[in-house]
Image (cartoon, rainbow, N blue to C red; front, side, top):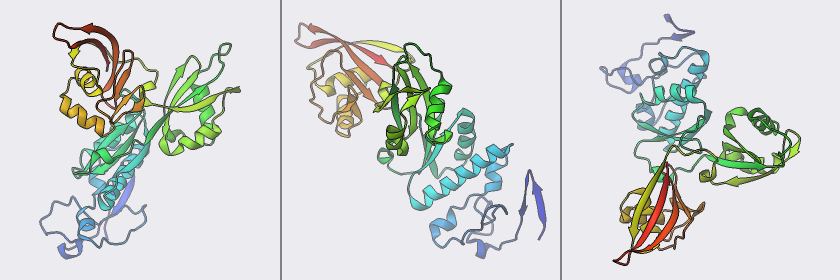
Length: 315
């Protein structure tokens, strides 16, 4: 068999007739049974779905230049195949912006698979990717990250990002399981892999030799500056959640009611599923991925008997 060098690896090319490949003789070669020699051989696909979805690793990774990029590319290809074959979402570790860019360059070439990114907040640098089959019910995908806040007495000791990260890794957690870290006056907030939440709540107990109390918080409580604040003056028939939220987020009341019943809204970081829930001045309404709305002021009634509100949308 001829061996053809490509980049850092060599691939054994084996001629396969159309019958053994399970494809027509004039196919484009996108799907193939060929495998990299360094990877263990897998059993030949037995179902029609498996025969269709075998990705060409050479073609999909040909633009990658380093070993690290190639490793990420293969990971994404494997996860894509598994998501398609099992019809279940597959979750990566946290990727930095460059790693995310590499992963997206692979995913964008696989139309059968889509991706969601989770980093705890909109501008997160480190994100986990969830790969799922097209037509999969996105609403059923669980958030693979959680946010922990560590509080301690740091009035006389300044801590750094490195101190916080070191204290987490000191519990035995690997770096790729930790997302962004945000320093606060009393400690820090950490975005972590959701499956490690309980472990860290039990074992992360100090930062730079200072005892800390760790608790899980809502993503909306992450201490980051909002991108911008939009002031909204609106009138509503009542202080029902569906009425106030639809005005704040600029969507129809019908759609907002549907989102509330699906428990996509939170009031003061608590999920609410009753559209008639009474909202009060000072309440914070949040929807994941769409920011927050603060009920800044209830100004009173208009001549027509509606309530006049001053809302602030944090985006």
